Length: 322
Image (cartoon, helix red, strand yellow):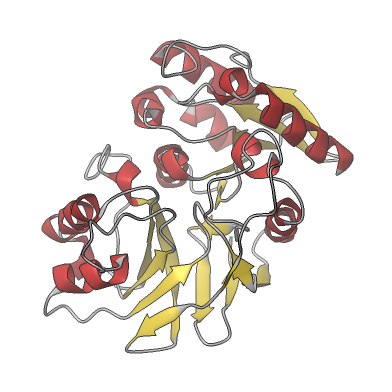
């Protein structure tokens, strides 16, 4: 039986969405998962689950708990970057664990991967946001997650993208109606296939710690993975330009661009891929876009730091060496 400890590095979702939280607990317990609650469960300090020191204490308690194998965020938010200097990296070096989450959890995932490479970090489901979803979408996210989680260390796993997806904002607490699904299709520039070490996560989170000691160093063997949600075209252009100005686009071999959930094009008709290509200008990096490891559902779990081989036509990815 896998033991998952959960914590709230930013948004106090266990306090503000108790109905969805309970549904997530039931789903995971029915899958045979043993759960260990962080000590801020059910607590709230305004926009966050607790002070910076309270939130990192919650995380470190799970890191120091020998019974906990996997540590999962309950949801994202805005303020996970405040925890990075205080994480107990030394205990993790002696006793590596697996970390899971997405969105604002990007800061913690990348910091841990940089400081403690032996830890597995999975850009994947958050407890309340993902496993509080209704069927059939929740089971599809679960299957993708468990296939990656159960892959032996150093092994490989191939994931087929879901045939359909949605970013419809519906059914957060109670079920109203089935979400409207759209056919899934990855798009690409220059080449249908890209392979390399995959690093990255949520772009809006990255600007909170870019070029800090917790931010990864990229190489020409790397694929930059970036995704975002609920942003407008102006913000997306700003964040893409941030990466360009930091020199990151000149360091990698290609880009994996996730689907942008609930994107506001500011009445321009432009998509995130269009904006990215304009920002890249004469840097003709190959791109595979509309990848589904992001705020859309169902979600593919992406092992950060793994070797990844993407096939846009087959909508398939193989992860290895993680």
